[in-house]
Length: 159
Image (spheres, helix red, strand yellow):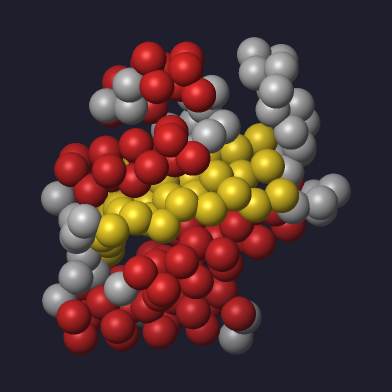
């Protein structure tokens, strides 16, 4: 059993106990967080769903402000937090997660982007945790896995 699976099992148990629901909006992890959660039995009792908003157009369509993206860049704490709040609202969940970043290449549309720079936000009640990570893995899967592990730690911390 892997670290991620252990953390997801603990999260599901904690969310059930507290009667809380989780929703996510992922970009660079491409649904990896939702996948990790739904791989564990019992996740349907606490996981409302996930939105994979890989492009800016999809983020905007779901409710992330175009002005926010233009002002701060899609790779920013502000956009990650907006994604978390959008996930909560759309999925009617108690906890929302937003993940955005540039995994393995510099984004030609975002000249200030850095490879391996990931922004994660977790929104719960009136609280929010927002963090920036800089991962130096050469493999996309490695960055995704590290990000998912950090997100699970952040959710545990905020609840």
